[in-house]
Image (cartoon, rainbow, N blue to C red):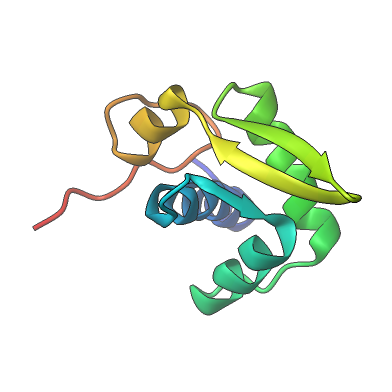
Length: 99
């Protein structure tokens, strides 16, 4: 059984993917992601956002680039599949079905 910290981590990673799905270019910088996470109840440091971005990139769910020292995340096709519930990745919460 997962502990509270694992529930929060998996939900936060899903939230990042869902934010990227909402952007027309499927791409958002670390500062916008931090603000969006706070808006959905995840008050985290910028270091935590960067760590999650690196982890999600290692899983092939997004690509991280740096523009003038700012991390920019871009969703991959696999990341979109995870965000929509078509693919399950341990460490990322599975989304609830839409009504």
